Every structure is written in C-alpha cells, then in structure tokens.
Amino acid sequence: MGSFRRRAARHPHALSDARKAALRRCQAARKKCRPLQSSTADKENIHITTGSGSSADALATRSDAAHCASQTKLGCGKHNLRAMGAKLNEARADRDALQSQVSKQDRTIENLQGRLRSYQRQHHNENRQLKRAQSMNNVLRQKLMFSEHERRRLLKAAAAASGTYARTMRDSQIVIGRLEELATHLRSKLGVSQQQSRTLLRHCARFPKLLASAKKRGQHARGSGTKSVVQLREKGVYTPQARSLARALVRAGCAQDRVGMVIQLVAGALGVAVKAKMSTHTVRRAVIEGGIASDIQVGFELAHAKRG
Image (cartoon, rainbow, N blue to C red; front, top):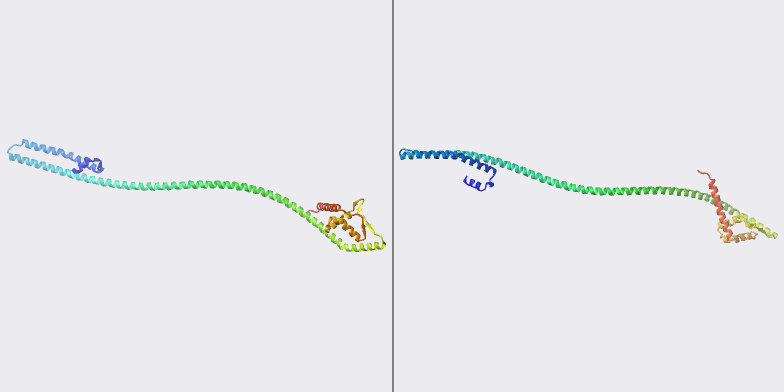
C-alpha cells in the first residue's frame, strides 16, 4: 500500500478512476482511526504520570496499558483492514464493472466505427454511382438531342420527298396524258399509214394491167403516127395528180431531184409526151404539202373520233 500511495502521490493522473476511488476510501478510513490512537496514548500518559505505589505496580500498569493500547491498535487495524478489504473488493467489483462497461463501450465504438466505415464505403459507392448516372444522363441527353435533330432533319426530308413525289406524280400524269395522246395520234397515223399502204398495194397490183393497157395505147398511137401529150400544169400550176405522183415516187424511194426525169422517162416509155419537167424544189414543196395535209386529216379524225 505504501508504494501504491507513493505512486499515487507522484503520478495522480496515471491512475484509473477505480484506483482513485479506492485511494480516497483508504484515506477516509485512516482519518477515522486517528482519534482512537490519540485517545489511547492519552490514557497511557495519564496512567504513567498519575500512577502511585511501587515501581513494579507502575511497570505492570504500564505494561497493561501498553498491552491494552496494542490490543486496541490491533483491533483498529483489523477493523480497518477488513474495511479496506471490503472496500477493495468493492473497488475491484467497480473496476470489473467499469472494465466490462469499457469493453462494451469499446465494442460499441468498434461496431460504430465498422458501421461508419460501411457507411463511408456505401457513401463512396453511391457517389460513384451518382457520377456514373450523371455521366450517363449527359450521354443520354446528347443522344436525345442528336435524335431530335435527326428527327427534324428526317421530317424535313420527308416533307421535301412528299413534295417531290407530288410534283413527280403530277409530272408523270401530265407525261402519261401526253404519251396517251401521242399513242392515240400514232395509232391514228398508223391506221392512216396502213390504209395508204393498202392503197399503194392495190395500186401496185393494178399497175401491171395499167402498164399493159398503156403499152397497147402506145403501140396503137405509134401505128397511127400520133402521140398523146400529158399536161402536168394548168395555168402554170402543177395539178394535184402531178403532185400526188411526185409524192408516190418519193415514198417509193426515188430521189427528189430525179422525180421529174423519171416521170418523163416512164411517160416516154408509155408513148406519152410530157412537156414540163418537175423541178427538185417543186417536188420538195409537194412532199411538205402532203405532210401538212396528212396532219390536218389526222386532227380532223381525232376531233370527230368517239371518246370511250
């Protein structure tokens, strides 16, 4: 206990709360025992100073007084020792309770620290997830803006395409109408051409007979000494029959500058005299007039044709 008190006196801050409480209880017990010791010493002094009789009696009296004092001190010490033991046990129980509480508090602190670390990790993970979500949100916003731009561009393209389609349909309808008109016109021309072809075929079929009869007339004329004369012009203008003959020769493949000569040669071979020779310019004008007349005829037929 002395060393304990000395350490407590030198280093009071190094003691735990339980040991400080035990030290305070020991000091209180010592203070209680001091009045008993002082009263016993006073009694001894009284007996020694007031004693009478012989020295032996005085010595016995002193020894008895000392024995009583020692017994008193021993009883006080035992009492103090028991009190100190009880208080020490209490202090130990308090220390154990405090240690258990401290261990509980330590475990609680460790649990709280673990929960704090878990919360910190969770907070860190949530922050990372939040940053990822923000970055993903930015990416999605950019994609949304791009898709919106593409949607507007596609709408504009669709509107332009629809306008182009409408114009194309109108133009195609116009072209189809014109093509139908042209097909109708060509059909009518084809009909006229077929009719003319049939007419020419009939003319060609009759031409040998006409040639034979013309030869007979020529031979008869040569035998009689007279020769017939054909006038291709009337009042200085070529007759429609002459112009039709020129067009027939051109369609048959004769060159325009050779039509007049061919007419004279055929007429001479048939015993007919042709005074005028049709020029190239006249043949060309006859062909042009025949084309114009054909167009007029086609227009007339189209105007009077029945519409289905």
